[in-house]
Image (cartoon, rainbow, N blue to C red):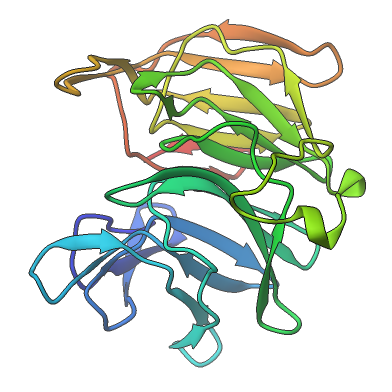
Length: 260
């Protein structure tokens, strides 16, 4: 679990039920946005870092935690700084999808090869977006919700790496190539800053911000939960959480989904 609001982020590790251990995060003034686990290594990607002007700006930094040595290592930066984006792990690659800086929202998508510590662009997401969520199911990366044109979205889009374009097509601001991306049935509720997890062949979505006013960006937490069945391409509303949540965490432990 990442403490997003802390300057020197601390990581909380659940060793066993009802017992948390605190791990020191990278010793940089960083608010990490995304976490990925590959081969028992923990990767922290992007987010916001404190600049010389005393303000937080989108970051391209990537750090890897080695639990064997209890140590952090700076890895290759992403090609562009990103905050409020989504990640997913497929094979040896970590995918980073869309996001924003203080001045720009974009659709670029890139992937990190853990074997050679390098990033490369892949087919971009169909639209500019931030505040969305990503989860891998059946070796495909599902992206749900988010904010486009200052409004929340019900959109569900899946990335299939087996349909990737050529290297020349994997650019950030040239013509959009969407061979890899396919729209699926929309969620029942438009939401952003929600959480999603794959479990038993289905996708579960929890909470998030379900109301955003275009002018003031006032928001309201959402308690709703829904599940997606990829075999039928259908969403089903489940029992709502006791309270609305956004910016929370979700994981599976002992065959139960825990919302933190």
